[in-house]
Amino acid sequence: MDQKPAFGCLKYSEQHAPGVGLTLDISEILASEQSAYQRITFYRNPYLGVFFTLDGYIQLTEGDEFAYHDMIVHPAMAVNPQIKNVLVIGGGDGGTVRELCRYPTIEKIIMVEIDERVVRLSQKFLPSTACVIDNDSRLTNIYEDGLTYIKNSASAQLDLIIVDSTDPIGSGEGLFSREFYHNCHRALNKNGILINQHESAFYPWDGYEMKRANDKIKSVFPIAKVYGFNMPSYASGYWYFGFAAKNLDPVSDIKAEQWQNFGLETKYYNIELHKAAFALPSYVKKLLSE
Ligand code: AG3
Image 1: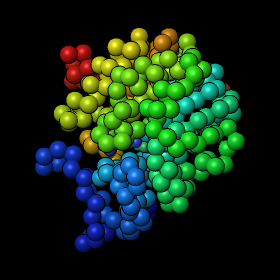
Image 2: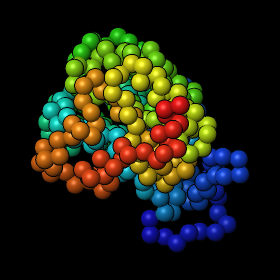
Image 3: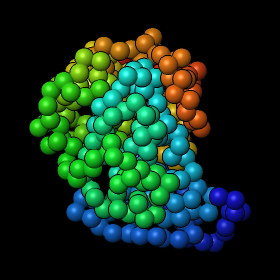
């Protein structure tokens, strides 16, 4: 993390718009394989540390994963600090379950990841995110398609579902379907919350998917908002999660004091930022309301 940028070395480049992209120096290619579901590649960058891609899109870098994983977990926990029973779909790198495991009050976490290879490679090259996998008795790992898992799950049992998915292409596509959202609604109890990876708004192809997902979630859940956060390694540097619920509003129902009593140190998340994250730029409001 403290090395000067290198010149003339191997580059990783990802296109985000015509003529616009993100380029990272590669100091090492750690692994590259085609699993049953996707091409998985792990690299090292001298500044951002280890990063990995699935089918050519960056999923996380050690340098900025704190923003993603703080924001996928802590807002829901601040809205309902009584959450005990959690389902995570995707999230094979372990960052999401790492943050969940910091709450002593959470009793049970099931992580359903389609691709065991993502988990095993993360355990090898990303111990900073994969550290709780196989190490916390509250956590059960299941290697299955989240779509199938939720279809067969019991009704009204879960306090929280987190969908830490890839983009809606390839193996992640079903996790953006109306059928999937219906099953999530059924599996959640009356105070249940669904958090999902919600793409981004600035570039039109991401914005198209963001709106499509939001329209479907709005037709299933009475409360369906999105909230944003700064994510330097993703397209436009800004990304969104969805917050959907049957009953709890993400801003007016926040339990600030109770959350603060957990005493967690967080590098990105705090209560003031929580409220601000749900305030959207005008062009995003327009995109989602049209
Ligand atoms: N999950 C993938 C987020 C979406 C990435 N998309 C993109 N870069 N176009 C990240 C997993 C972190 N636990």
